[in-house]
Length: 270
Image 1 (cartoon, helix red, strand yellow):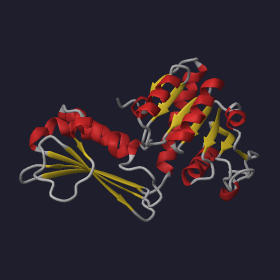
Image 2 (cartoon, helix red, strand yellow):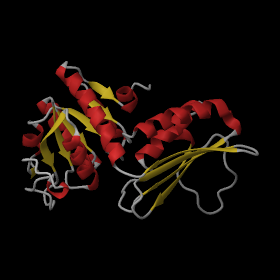
Image 3 (cartoon, helix red, strand yellow):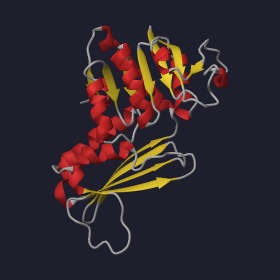
Image 4 (cartoon, one colour):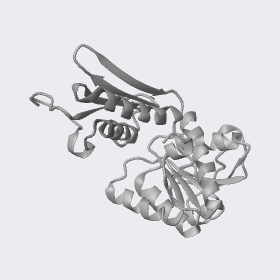
């Protein structure tokens, strides 16, 4: 039985993760974390789901994590880094779906992964991770005659743009095309921009309503266009992927293995 702690337990993703863990026969919820001042504090995270868990949401990160084999974290970069430092101290594995890390944040995660197993992925959906492979393959096979654009839409509450998934798709396209994303990404267009520079990869971001997540990678050639799209209609698919990742890192923790992994490792599709 894998003992799981959930960070951001009072949020939308936290509730989806709680529901998924409670329904999983091989996982047990042992701790729930939220920020100081959260209305979820001191409450049972399963209450809103009609399922008493015997767990109380706490802001005491060290105490909560100490009871778990794995922490699942879909929160904000600053909070996630605090949580991972506690995981490293307590030798607890981690699954991170948080997005928006800068280079220093990624370096800090990589350093923690020397001590504990961590799965870091901007999107835990099985479908999205298959899409990443398809995008790389399409970019390689279509070649420079096709312009590449990445379009994404999320709900009005999302705080980072482009989404971590969109950036990951851009990285896959760049790898397939044999270019560096950092040197070829175009994140905004306004005014007289001039003609499209060959080899660039454009990003477009939409925000509104309650859209869970939609991503399209568009390959535009002369006289034809290929579009690869994934639409998430529920957070349950992200939660299901996170649980697969939790089992994956728990097994490595049990063998005292550390390392930084992604969903391709979890799913065996690398």
